[in-house]
Image 1 (cartoon, rainbow, N blue to C red):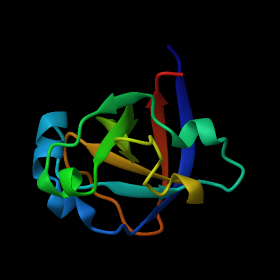
Image 2: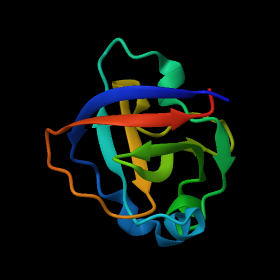
Image 3: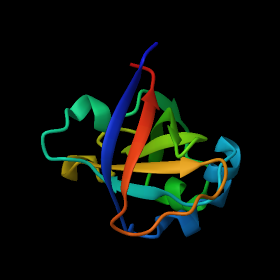
Length: 124
């Protein structure tokens, strides 16, 4: 499997991560996501991860939600690209339509809003 490198700008998120401690624990990552705005011409294949993971918290059970994930690296730190999906319909619930990807990492990194970031997405 090959990797795909994408560049985008760090932007603030919606703070839903506070409702998902078990999800992040199960992935082995720090709780929370880093939202990265990709250029408008980015192929949709980049915004949609390829592996399904069950929701693990009451918040996701209440909204009937699972996740698609893809392994990635950002600033040398391993993690996952995540995209919430409806368990029943498979409809994407995340920000992918606006060309935003959400990244969760195994350790905290230092970044600032508006910073340009390059992410290595695995599994292409």
